[in-house]
Length: 364
Image (cartoon, rainbow, N blue to C red; front, side, top):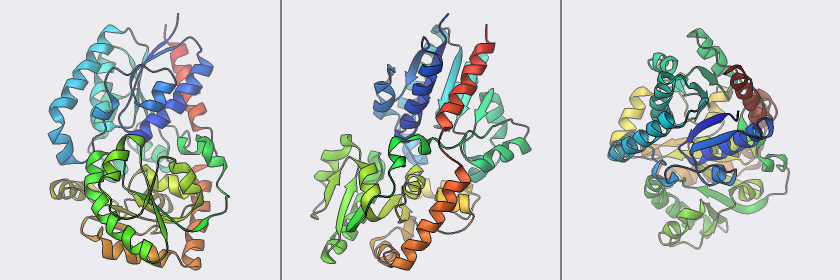
């Protein structure tokens, strides 16, 4: 009989990781049925998402609280689908607040619950480790130190590699760079655009006055919002990988984008600004001295971080202009080589899919 899988991604990076995983699962299990929640990349692989993906794409504690009734309704829909679908496996792609609840429910139905891209408890504290145990039968990690972290808490969490390295454009990182082009990345969520665009706009105007060419890299669905909000002569692009591969440097929002930029060899400064309440709650929970993934992987400050009050146009402009010296650019690119060595080569999606296929083969 065909295996049935329920998969959930809640943000743009998870959607792309989910699509890569689906592609490999479909090669190993051509007759498998995959349903759940995902965005355009997963839908292009044949997923029929049970809800509109944009409803899931929420970040920040205050923002999640405001969206809680909507997310709770979606959680009920997902639980109903799991109850009715006779699924063999549930796969959570990151998105821990939502997916841990759904994973625990899947386990209660005797559906094998799999986490792909583990919750970053090493950054947020270890108090939720029991919740991970209650939510998932299998945890697949994408950062090498996570396997050891979870093993310390009696959770087997094999490292499969990072799926960013599986993206096709990662093979093309040695292109000639445009000495004037600066990549601006405000984020992929409306609340991120709201907080970040005013900061980036002031920086963009200063960069233009110094003969640089800033380009906003955003998803297509945010084009009108950004276009109507900028007064500078900055360009807008939906082809982020292309801009990353040719830009002299970037101003990159915290998150997966910082690691993606590093793997694309694009020097950068990183930043994040959110509501005061969300920031205070986050600050009280974060246990590491860094937020940007490249810095965490290296255990040192390679990427300048501008957070909350420091994420202001004056400091960030100074930061990006300082970065543009040849020595600073060289130092970052040397660090990016170290990160690629730490993460290993491509193949994370294939390895994760094989492990999942092996699990499904044991289920009658």
